[in-house]
Image 1 (cartoon, rainbow, N blue to C red):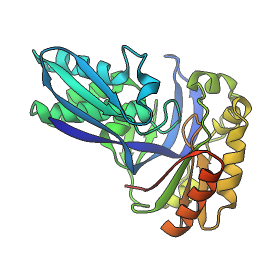
Image 2 (image 1 turned 120 degrees about the vertical axis):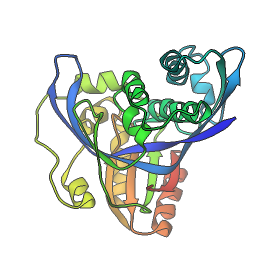
Image 3 (image 1 turned 180 degrees about the vertical axis):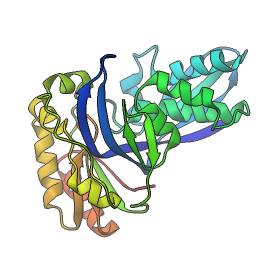
Image 4 (image 1 turned 45 degrees about the horizontal axis):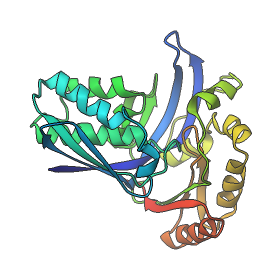
Length: 274
């Protein structure tokens, strides 16, 4: 059995640019990854099997074709694997929450299967598989801080912010990525700037935050709490929401903000940037 972490992804900035002919949008984003998240365990088996555990496993119980199973099936086809796989997904991150849960799980499945079958993580077939599963999956497969362009799958590695305390907060609402994009005003407000990673993030924005707030106004309450938290150095919504995050100067100030979020009944994760 091989176990791989599926860490939470955050978008330090997310700029939506033009709509592409393939229906996707060109984006520019600063991907960063936390040291905590879901966990995937795989092993060879006679029949396909998926066991869901963890506090959010129930949310996927009715899905018969989620990204983890798709990743397993496509891996078998691409690499000519005869046997099926038994997979356990320990689902600790909320579903449809803007922190790459499904993409991270698919990427972790690919990494685990690659280790199980002695496939190099730099094998171009693995990268192609990741891109076929979704725009965020290549970044999650890589698992490093990167600048993503195009659909978000053209990646350039970046340095900075490793070890920074971060708090993730979700108010318990799920928002549809398609609905958020549909509510975006379509205005191209320009690219992500140059410079140090924190400076680029601070000067950036998330173009999907305003349409997400329209659909789920509670996101504004989460942002207000994080913006006002002592020690917060950057607060933003991640992805298409509804999870928001804040980077903190110290773990103590992060944990104090986590207690505030907990007092409101919101899901929270105190972690650090990888």
